[in-house]
Image 1 (spheres, rainbow, N blue to C red):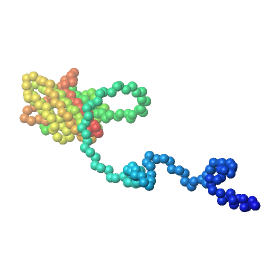
Image 2: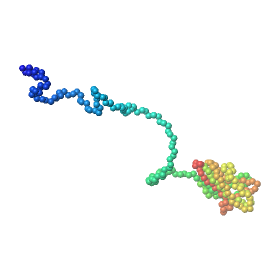
Image 3: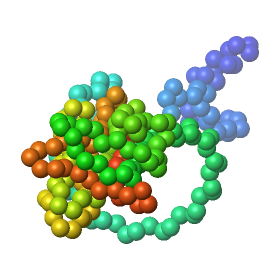
Image 4: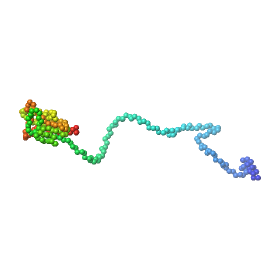
Length: 251
C-alpha cells in the first residue's frame, strides 16, 4: 500500500505539489561545478546573435638575458697611441718636514798619499871643465828618504808621477852661463845667460813625467867661452828643487 501511494505521488504534475500541503524548500545545488565561473573581463565573449568585440593587439617581448651567451676570450692588445703633449708645470708644493739626522757611518780607510820632494843648494862657485860635467851640490835642504845624491847631483825617482823642477843660479861677471836640466841622458831645458859686466840671477822651471828609476840632474859644459856659475860661502845662490805634483796612480 505504501508503494502504491508513492507511485501515485510521482505521477502527479509539478503544479499539484503545492496543493498537497507539502512544505516548500529552496533548491540547493547538489554538485559543485567542475570549473569556477570566469571572472568578468573588459571584453565580452562572443555569443550567438551578438556582434563580436575585437581583442587587443598583444606585442610579444623577448628576454635578452635568457639568450645571452658565455663570456668570450680576451682579445689581443691594440697598439699604443701617441704620447700626449706635456702639460704645464704645476705649482710648487709645500716644504716637507725636516728629516732626522742619520747615524754616522764607519770610518773610511786612511789616505796614504804619495809624496816626494827635494831641495838642494851649492855655496861654492863652479867653472866648466873640458866636456860635460854634472853639477854637484853641497847643501841639503829637503831630501826625504835620501832620494837626491849630493855628490853626483842626481835625483833618483822612486814615486812615479808628474814632477815640478826648478833651477836657480847666480851668473859670473864677464862669463857665460850655460846649463841644462837633464832627464836621464836627454837635455830637456836650458838655462843661459850671456857674459856681462853685472852678474844676475837666472831661473828655469818645467814639469816632467818621471817613471820609477828615472834621474834628473844639472849639466854644465864648456864651449868656446868660459862657462861658470857664481857662489859664496855666506850666501846660497845656487839651488835645485823638485816635488811630486800628482802621482801616476792618480793620473
